[in-house]
Length: 185
Image (tube, rainbow, N blue to C red; front, side, top):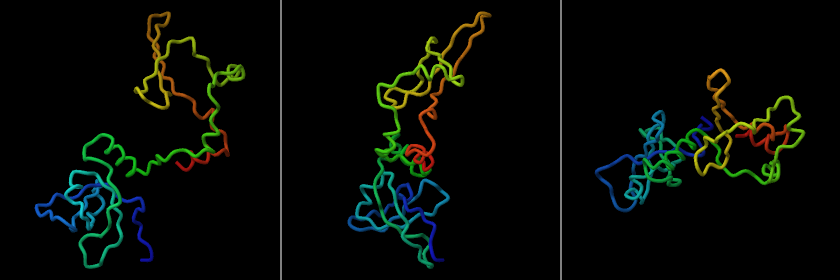
């Protein structure tokens, strides 16, 4: 074997509870949240402090005579069960890139305040629905308000429910920094 296919970003999980926690450096087992992966033996002086935390561990190697690979602690994500911590675990485990966008990508966004132009209104592939009472269904504090609904009564008494999803591709031009970043993510 010339190269192992271990994830460079590491594995999320927690330490296996132990009755024999020691003060000072201790060899403990790390349990990945993804059960398909083996437990990993790590050396740490922080086992007491890390016991109720989600952490990231990287595998360094796996000796032929060992039941478990050995690795090292990388960082703490937060307390087990905390919503933000578990969300970060899901993002890491599923390779979701959450790094900030580069200045080149931000330059592709139209300057604020942006408004609908006459050219947009003439586009036969678009409909101006500003005359309909539409309300956002995005949660408070959301950075991208792009999902909305409307309900209105039709002349025959039926109700029309409209689902509105922002057409972000309108701003995504081929070959731009934003297009290239979208392909990477």
